[in-house]
Image 1 (tube, one colour):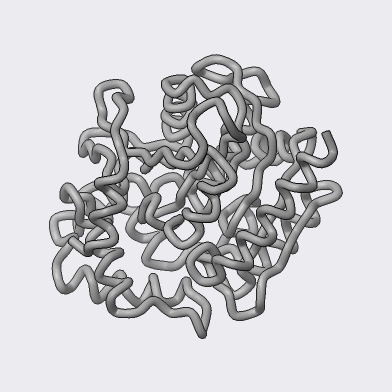
Image 2: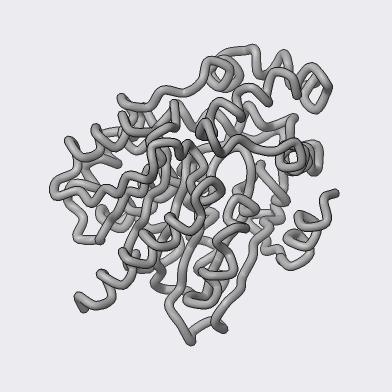
Length: 305
């Protein structure tokens, strides 16, 4: 395993979520002594997506960052139905386990959908592990408004058809890599493509604990975005929680077109567009810009109190 990735794993811990081990990182201010920040990563990787902004975030917050069930260093059960609602349950269970009753949220990709579900539960009185308050939400690129989301063809085939089940035994093979890597490259901006070393690290994350067996099952969250679209949008339209979208416009899935639709749907929306060449992973491709815009949002929220 890559040395930096191994250090990331070794710095984490686990908690029991309904019989499954969930990996999480907890760092920064001791619990209860500073503002809490919940990081919700995306698909198909894990909390290592936050590595380039981690040091700055942990100087300011008590940072709580779990790996989603089925991804990263968390358990990867095969006989399991992965849903956005279940991911939200896990995050609420972790916060309850840690005794956290309020937190800012920074989310990306699939994490946006989990954040939307958490927000809807707050708005509609449906929290599962006791009440907790969302102090602010900052969204990074993701399928926030379902009709504007344009997933890659391979993503739709693997998660939405029987092809995922048929090809699951081949995951991790040379053929699988040749199929996956062009899709990953396409998601990054034209000047911020992943290096060969980064791609190798990403493959190690996917392969950990034979994770590619369940990758297509976790990817079925696309159906949840269709089913829950109106509920999630209603929550965003009525919430008093301050929200900001920081968007990498070159993302073919949820770039500038998603930001435009978000601004149309969410009243008085706060949207920050990054440089034109930034793609789907802004926290990796433009970490300093993401930090600046995120912390500006936090400062505005806290100064208004």
